[in-house]
Image 1 (cartoon, rainbow, N blue to C red):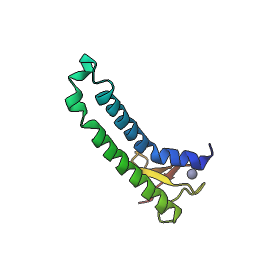
Image 2: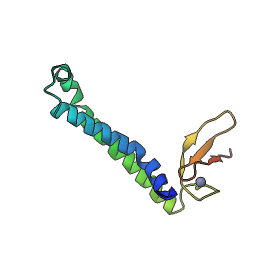
Image 3: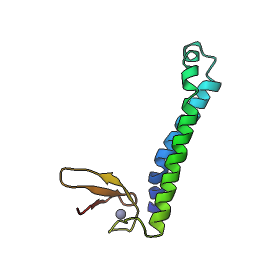
Image 4: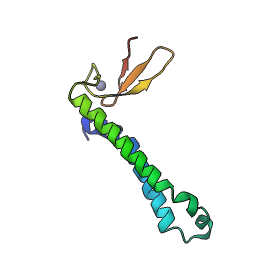
Length: 110
Ligand SMILES: [Zn+2]
């Protein structure tokens, strides 16, 4: 996997995790619903799939929008490799964004 594929993997990881949670909850409410211990929790767990699917859709949409804006040059890019930058992180030494391509820290000047 090249570094741009890793960048896309990192960008879409929250959406993939939310999708896995939705699939796990669907499995729980349908296939594993006959198990007595889990059966009592099914009325509560039935709300997990739609919420997790909505979270996956939202996270995937945000990642797609971020990648689209990065490709058009509207998002800040890494000064080392030109990759897309992640979310803003706060540190005692100053705010920075981490490159999703090479992992380098890009300081944010105030
Ligand atoms: Zn970089």
